[in-house]
Image (cartoon, rainbow, N blue to C red; front, side, top):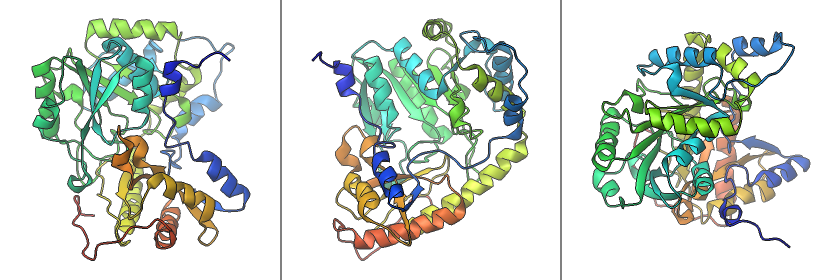
Length: 411
């Protein structure tokens, strides 16, 4: 039998999707599974985007330009200007989701064996993109007791080697929901300029910032014209995950030209997705206002509910729609699988993502889970009650300290 490639063997399974067979089996047994494992919102896609597909009048579904339709890129440039980000349509490449944008960036900026520093816990698929590009992920630890704030500059400096070529952040963060302050971003700016690194900023959750906080883009920082790469996507902004449309954005002309060659090799981004995404640019602000209010209510139900359970610690996020909770358990992979195989409360159970897959060293997330508050409020209340009963019944429950822990973020 021919051997599977080294990259294929190194490619990690998704912690978000690897328990799907157990969820499917639970459903066949009649158990209702509450899906908090994946960032698939139940928020309605804007009608203006749906109408663009419903009323499409074309005789041929053709390729677009490899960088994407010019009209869409010009519309995106106007959108970014409204967020204080000055770019032209000739600095934007439309991609098959934010995932392809990040992969293009890694392949354009890094040699095999180069290192990229990522604050952890981080989006699990960053590991997959790094394996695909032959890049080594070097984690810098963020801790739950600080709410996953950016580590000190000395922590970054200690990790920089001759192979270090970049830093990657997600802002607001997946899986933590942490929103970087301008001061934290200025710290990153200083490191990037001192060591001549690339700064990749995954900003797909830009619209979802809470409690009066404002998102600051990496492209708003002075002096990073040759260093900053913005990764974006319509998936969460418009609840259009299936459109598979993202964007690679840089003011670095040489980097842009390099990434465009990868874009040409895959021909073009999806036609239907671009049509819907261009139309979505006309979404009224009231849509985002309503969605943000809804997410704040969902966040408070889930996070406050989790923190009401003895032994659970969950910082309150200021952005995105994820949170990481530390549970009084022996092993998050075992617990999440046990929930699907052996636990039922009033006909329901909960599906979550073990946090082991969001760390470079799985042991760091052994007692943590990621939850996505993307379902309506009643489902979230039910999920909290399921988890309250599940933790009481779980055979691998750990001892709980008598004094409650103080939480960052007012949770």
